[in-house]
Amino acid sequence: MANPLDISAKLALDTQSLEQLRAQAKHSPDQALKAAAQQFESVFLNMMLKSMREATPQEGMFDSEQTRMFTGMLDQQLVQSMSSRGVGLADIMVKQLRGQLTEAVNSGQRIGAQPSISALPSAYSENAQQGFVDRMLPFAVQASQASGVPPQLMLGQAALESGWGKREIRMADGSNSFNLFGIKASGGWDGKVAEVMTTEYKNGIAHKQIEKFRAYSSYTEAFQDYASLIGNNPRYAGVLQQGGDVAGMAQAMQNAGYATDPDYADKLARVMGMVKIQA
Image (cartoon, rainbow, N blue to C red; front, side):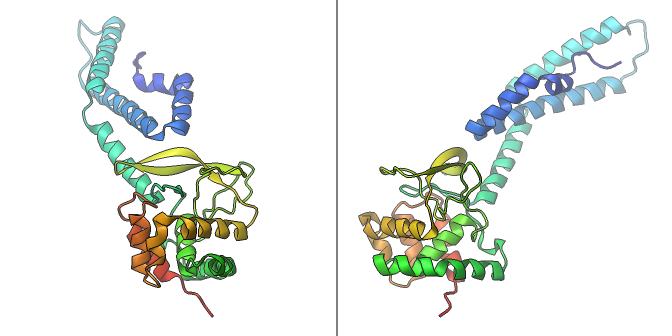
């Protein structure tokens, strides 16, 4: 006989709780991940107790629908008690899933330029990488001539933040924001904005949340705005003093507070090293 108080059935039928969890995932993904892991732990404990009961002989003078109902109620209380304290399964799931999300996104928190989706250097083929560089080179050269910011830095930053152009920030209607650099809509920005889910690092821990980013009318405008940020902000003066030293520029970007990801300088240096500017 099926347990009328089966928690897994209750969770499946409780659409209100499911909708609340979905809403929480949009605004507080980290808390939603913990809640989902705790629910899974409760379901797992309930299934474990249920399997144990089914493996126990049920025949006898005390076996009846009433005793099975009260046994089910007792099991529910046990599961609730154990789940409230936790058995460690939920914590393991949260740690593993959070690590996978962090590794997949590979982005850091910016001050002045906020994170979008970054890509590992090896994530895309060499042809795709070079195609992105060739398409964006004219915009980088034009912005470099007006600001003095090296094209290689701009192209490397754009490649890292947009996944070599494969993961550009989109507007609500799906149109392109042309924001290759993940620059947040702050600092008196009064233009168009795009709201997207991004990853922020707080105390070394990645948190996903919705942020507003600047939206441009063209790549020309985007490169000019980025070059102005790096070329005119005193905090990035050390970046321009590195000359053509790729590792030096990447480290100076991180030292200036562009990202809190401890591996950001290494990631940026590797991507910049893959940028081949053809004459």
